[in-house]
Image (cartoon, rainbow, N blue to C red; front, side):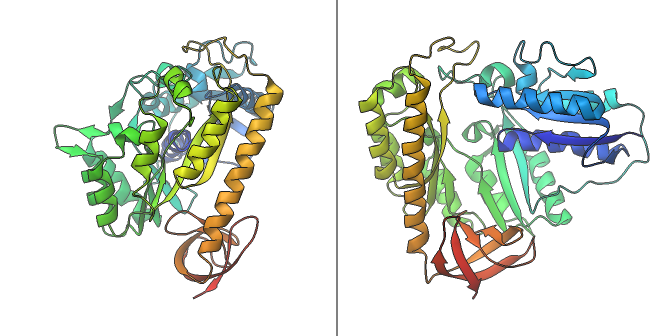
Length: 397
């Protein structure tokens, strides 16, 4: 029996993969610790240069505090990313489906087997799909995660039922490219899965982690609106509002198409990813991105300064100066803050259900942040009374 910890960097898919390893080790009877011990598992990210740098730092820290370190996730599958690490570090360069078995085998013999292992959060991230078969010129994910593949619907629904039984109030369907989910044998696409997952007994809130605008179909929107438990939140990556940049990125839509798709979704809270400083982005292209962000009705942005990724179409191409990227990122984040405050202010006087996921804070049905006192894990009916820099101020309704 070993003592272990599992940490993750990056997206919700990385979190779900890390939790799969954690559950396997707990199920095998090993003991989880917060710091120091026999084994550390670091599930890494490599989507940007900063992400891989932070992953390497996390692995280096773990190597000093644990006897053995297993490096998993996207960064582990990026060739050479962890060359020269400490001798007690093992890089597990395998598909996500194989990671838990491989790490468990390395950790060693079984202890007293546990029947189940609860996730530590109030919401559960259930991975339904992995990999990507598209070829955006900046993106390393197809290289490190492989082509798109989906879980069988029975396994997905079974996991959701298990998470509900563990006490999770919110289920987040996650994947690298959610719209590619298919279980052809069972006759399921994402809209049908949304309807059935949201109707399972005990599911109080269902949310999608992210959806590409090309996959934002009328059927999917109808399914979300027809499912009472479905959150009115959609995270739809934009990346750029300039058509020439989008073409250079090998994205499969124009700025006009993006705005047109999101236009009818005024009842949803819409958020997005944006890349700043892509090789062909000049000041005019960046200005168009600012315009499209407002036209599309977005309320929050995840801003990523561009960095070339090995093996991608723009590997080694990085002409936009760091100072320019930093300045544009600051302007875009300032706009994001302004748009968030506008949305929050519009909710003053209204009521909502807030899932408290940490002391003094939670998220409403449309994934807007609310500041409210309440027990972590509770769904509270609250009323908005004001706005702060961090979210909507609320009291019990």
